[in-house]
Amino acid sequence: MALPLMPKATAVWLVDNTTLSFKQISDFTGLHELEVNGIADGEVAVGVKGFDPIANNQLTSEEIKRAEDNPKAKLQLKHNPAAEGEQKRKGPRYTPLSKRQDRPAAIAWLVKFHPELSDGQISKLVGTTKPTIQSIRERTHWNISNISPVDPVALGMCRQTELDAAVAKAVAKKAKDGAALTEEEKLRLMSTEESLAAEPKMPTAMEGLENFTFSETAADKPEAEEAVPDAESFFNLPASDDKDEDDD
Image 1 (cartoon, rainbow, N blue to C red):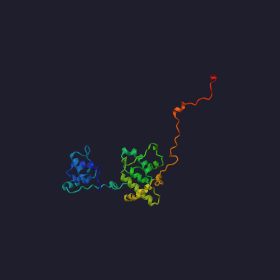
Image 2: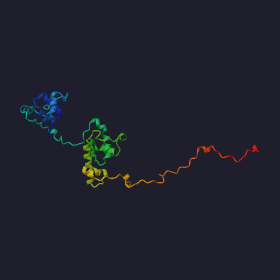
Image 3: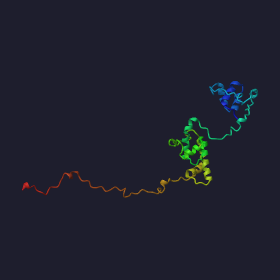
Image 4: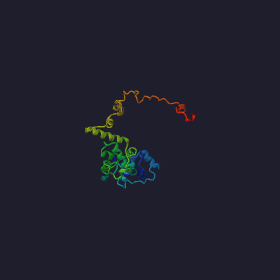
């Protein structure tokens, strides 16, 4: 169902200017019925100025009167040819102004750790353009020296489930095209049961050591202890053979 422009402001106007039920306003604006109730109680949308749907060509006074007379009736949004196709519009994800400065860092992270992702997939995940992605891939971005890769999930630019789905799709496409997959990419294509049932593989650095037994080598054997001379021997000097001529 198509929704009116500025649904919350429209709900404020309908609460203040009509006798429509909360359910009718909720169905028309797409808000939760409790949220509409909160607007009526002054707890929700405080300070929001009402948006007149009649003056803005979204409702007619006759349509509102019809719904007021029948509590079970639903308001019908007035047809607006200029709004056709708005719900089907495709393009990059909208990124809030507060997070746009972090976008290059998110792109750098995806390019570095998920090279299998296409530019189109990255564009949808973080809401950017293909030329920006290409400049970071080729390290020609004007601020490339100050860009440090940061996980877009940690930045709040996409959900972990969205990232996992995009990576799995990219890896599956790569496998379908016959390209060689890395061990990590193969794991992404495996189900949980398959990955748990797989025989654990010994790391490369440990291969060949499973039957190794430690044996004492010549280098490990303690060297023979040398005889340490007694300290007193340094003071017991041998008698001299030369006789003093004065004794003759």
